[in-house]
Image (cartoon, rainbow, N blue to C red; front, side, top):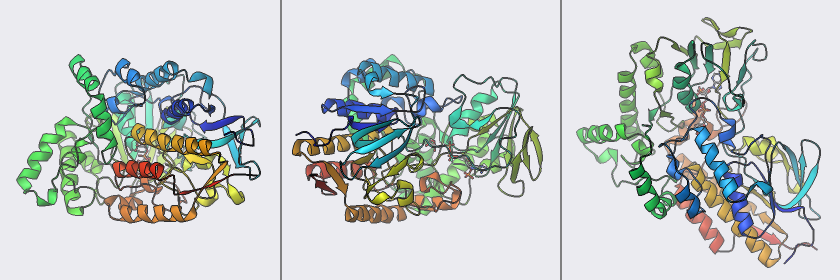
Length: 541
Ligand code: NA7
């Protein structure tokens, strides 16, 4: 049944990364028209912006991928366990070409605003050039860790050399060999970047406010035998991710709590798992690490001892050991030689957590209260405005004239992270209060729900779907209750982006559903099966 009001496209998406490409596939398959806009010069999203040395996936590549095409899963070959940004970027190009997605993509086009039009039920979308385009369904595929957090550090525009956010790495590349590099921040980005840069830079100095629980990645090349095993078992791999609490290819729950395990056995299990690498260290050891403070502390102590073993200088080692907060209150990075890098003569750690606080960036470097550090290059590896930052960067105005930014001022409510009350026909892929999980798994589950909703509306001749406020309140309460039962609730004490606590002048909040990605995917399916009870459907006159 055709809509009474004609739009330029059935669907407009913003963002041509994993989410945007996945959206194109499912919407095309539904027989609807779609255009995806991206301000970047290339597709790839995260994997086109984050071109810093060492940038790589933290999920293993064989399940950090889209699964809708069995052909692609068989044809594409990953070269190693954790593909670097170049390889992931090449993979996304492969997907776009193979599935004939290019006609549906418009690059170098920033969307600056989108307004819901009450009369027609369409979205009016405006580009940075002032061009306007309309759609019935408007989808944010902008990614949940993509809008840079650039803190207001005094003097950052005065520096004489390159000074940029890590996700705005110069696209033409940057020659840092023989240069003195200063990096502000020591999150997952720096953990990947620092050991790689240290190989050729004259010096690399990291300014650290909060140390992280960094666990081993254990990179390894893909062998023909391993690849065959993966490709022979893809259905099982996809099913495992779909049914895992974090959407990953791990065998958990393991049916064992640390609290019930004798200390010797705990050490034996942790020692056995540590050299295998990946987040399996948390997910395939014990089931109570994210809920029991004592169990979490035992593993935290184990990790700190490993750090002490790796770092030669005991003072530096102590500075690198997290203390006073639980493992996973901040998202833990994976290690590709980060700690060993501090044993090099050209790598320095500057503690800015206390009396040596960061004061300003000057023409020639960084000043702390302890002195001045000269640099040729400064990288602001200061993180992202997770979950809400990207949608808020576009002026999205819903019913009644309120913007998303206004709606999300003190909390960031949604229904399952996919839609928001007062914003009809707007869909988010991995919006706030969705789980934090292996992203391609969550992305695809979200897109399937969105596409099913759109297909249902089209087949019944509906013009508008309005998310119900009561359903939103229910999801918010449920998400908050579960969040409060986990140790991630302590994230606000350590500026965790998982609670939006890393953003200046922003109230910490519940941004993530921690009830299990698998449980969440079941809820999305239930919603489809029950005819989307969270939504009110309308036909316009
Ligand atoms: P993160 O993990 O948010 O790390 C940002 C780092 O920047 C962190 O060490 C912060 O210290 C530091 N930071 C932020 N603002 C400042 C100021 N004003 N002064 C000094 N230091 C600051 O971002 P990443 O890019 O490393 O990783 C983001 C995610 O991307 C990662 O978790 C993966 O999921 C992929 P703090 O900890 O707040 O003391």
